[in-house]
Image 1 (cartoon, rainbow, N blue to C red):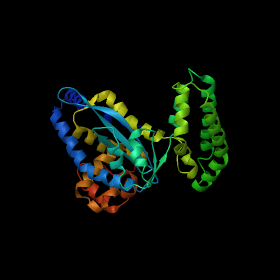
Image 2 (cartoon, rainbow, N blue to C red):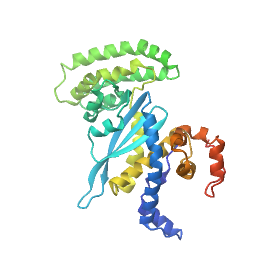
Image 3 (spheres, helix red, strand yellow):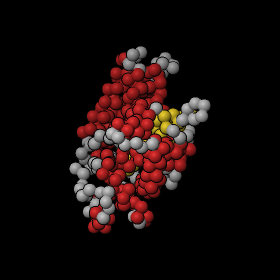
Image 4 (cartoon, helix red, strand yellow):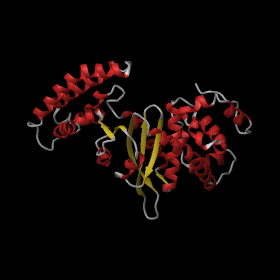
Length: 336
């Protein structure tokens, strides 16, 4: 499911669109609506974030964003966390440091898949969190070394291609069976690749692109081969990178966020839209119905309104009656 373009449309452009249609809505009014909706929806996203801490594996990534300031824009960061096939959560922090991941994943016990950024080092020092490396990042470094050392780069890419081929061939197996097949077929490839890395590391020029690629693979080796432990683990962190494109594409339209509060509102609403896409739910109908239900919905059952549980919740007589009684909703139908 493609995410709607309006999630990337800045308010000043929406204001002009409404004016062309004969409806005058001040930008301050639109901003107030967004803030009020985000405040209400924040309770739901907080419940989703708490539920995400029970996930088997969480993929995480970040991208920079400009924040409007008096003299000049300062830099903030959007983070994305993908918790299994349950939730996609966005977060904003004013700084790109270790405090963000530590706060997002406080109390989490399980696997975390990320790139080799230093911001995750403190997170992985605990015994509760196990690092899973990203073969896509590793592969990218060898691609970048192609122009200066094609032969070695091609050799490394050949090894990595075999790993992805094995992964693809076993993707439909049950987790336990997949773990066995991965180990059986991937371990010989990994053994040969590691031996090649160790021997070539002594021959390449220091600080060359190929030396950097080899060094990355050797330094991240323990995390890179973590996928052998469990058939549910992925070889790459592409799922979080793809989700993060929502903010990267939006950034091209709105250039910067107006404030830290605006960035927080963005993170709340995009979390729900992204989670809707994950569960193949129409985000427009979902947000309309959730905003109708949420104010009077029991707080101890708020997770029932998350995209993860939405289709089941719509089968609930209580939810249907509440929606039917509202003048703002159309007949309830499940999204295809």
